[in-house]
Length: 189
Image (cartoon, rainbow, N blue to C red; front, side):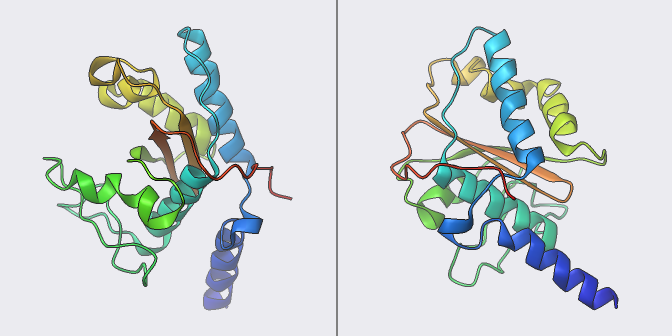
């Protein structure tokens, strides 16, 4: 019975991004995007267009984090498992950022997006994942800088953003190029 429930959960998780025609936003993902845009508006910053490609990357990454859990004592939440089976390459992202390229390249590996992707990630224990994640990032100096273009991101203009939430994992991917994949994202039925 437990195996059947797990299989059903995986089917439900993957159904929202398994094919390009089925990619949609779950309500918590839409909420996370809305919270990010509201926060940027409060800071006098322009909205960032929601990107189909970067959302595909975000959803794929939260799925990998949730199902394959590549995080360990060396590899942080920006890491990717070796379970990509020709979809992505494994990546152990360490706190010294020595392998940052392996994370930055994920949009090119998984989508039509040609630029680097920059990710903020969170694992939360609260039921409202979107709210908990945005609150955590606001209170984290480095993550907050990415969201509101401060510090080393001050001269960066975000042209695309992708949102993903699976289980208790949330990620936002930022990009400096416009997304060439102009598909519109709708709320999941």
